[in-house]
Each structure stands twice: as C-alpha cells, then as structure tokens.
Image (tube, rainbow, N blue to C red):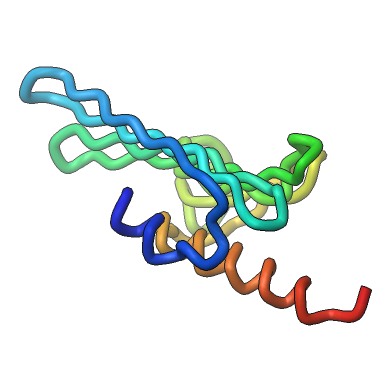
Length: 120
C-alpha cells in the first residue's frame, strides 16, 4: 500500500498505514489517507491464500461518504458481483467492476485536480 500511496504524494497531505499478520494465514493492511482538500480515504485490504477482500471509503471533511468501493458479497443481482460501489451519504449501491487502491487514488486525484481547476 505504501508504494501506491506515495505515488500520489501530490494530493496526499498525511497518511497512516498498518499491517496485521496472522501466522502463515492472513495479512490485513489498513491505511487512512488525508488529501490536500481535507477529504480522506480509509482503505482496507485483506489477503488469505488466493482470497482478497477490499474496502475503500472516500469521505468529505464532514465524514460523509463520497464513494465506497468494496467486494463484500452482497448484491448478488449485480453483474459485477461481488464488486460494487456505494455513492454519496445515502450510500446507494451500484454495480461496479473490481478496483485496486491505485485505481481509487487515481479517481480521487482526478476529482481533486478538477475541483482545483474549476472556478470557485
């Protein structure tokens, strides 16, 4: 995670990163990233064998969800099951393909840069 986060240093204000290892079975990485616009991303990645779970929740400075991407196996009706994302503070779910932390950070970077370039 750290290498990916550092790739986006231009938009990252601060970050915290932890790794939890269960002996020989499971690795969980967590990160909390604050961006230059004061929004933040809480990231979770869990690996156990060939299983990979993730959750990336981008929030505004008031801690309201902007987007959340995850692969929790609910919404079996979605064509991208189990992959999906939630939109806005009401967290309406929609079908969405699998993403990586790099994908999410690129999306956030594009949004932050675009908002800085638009007239206030």
